[in-house]
Length: 228
Image 1: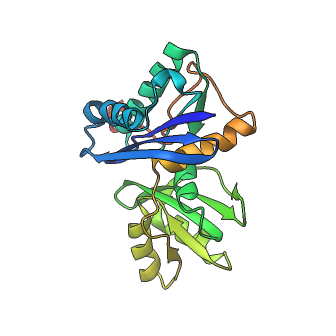
Image 2: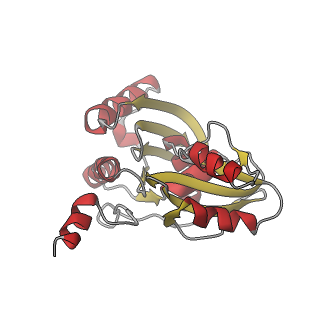
């Protein structure tokens, strides 16, 4: 089974190829959120590097959010287009699941965090004892809410995701001492590995049902409500 996965939820866009649960190719581009221009060339280069064609992909996977609204839409739209054109199934992987899978070598509790705005984060907790299992749903809240949940936990607690560094700063100021999963953030390789698990478990969807997960209103929607 060959999986092509995309992650465009943050400023670094990435693409990965996964064959039967093993990553065989990976490429990324820090495009300052200009993913609409960069992600398709990254995919094309990745396929060419590995001597593969798009028609050989069995499953298309996207990191569907939460994250940058525009970034999420770009990645989801690209995957929907590929899957629709070729009649292939899709995997919808949460950004926070991707961040947890990026830290799959860290045993214990995983707190996946992605900065939303100011001191707000998208976050979720996972357990990793040989297999990553979700502890909470994806949520959005202030750092203090996450720290209160951290305080209740015992044993190793790892912080992952591209908001991990900032979360660590809040935790240290509060006298907590979680461990930072250095360099572990949501990315297409982690998304591809989770997608392979989903394929094995029969948890795939189709291009018509692959949708972004935002968790909160966009700035335009918030301003519209405020002006009512």
